[in-house]
Image (cartoon, rainbow, N blue to C red):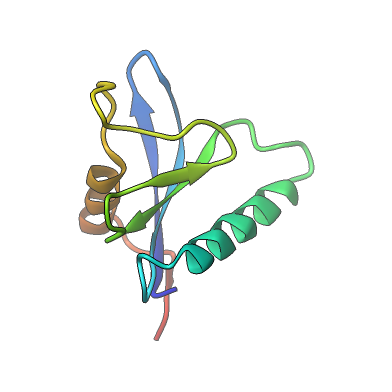
Length: 102
């Protein structure tokens, strides 16, 4: 993992939640993506009273784009929601990473 950033995403009439954008050394690596998703699930599970909002992850530079979470797939594809590629790109341009590998 090269870096990770976060943003609060609010989509009218659909809800809101925390999106974690992760830049991987190999954005197409399903094993690396799954390791990130597993780590996020473990982190959220450590919150004593349950996280009261959805938490999703998107992978910057992933071929075809994609967002993963414990719930529904997110975005794009004619649904009127922003696509995961656009979300990851926006987060990369407009936020400061909370993790960056040296």
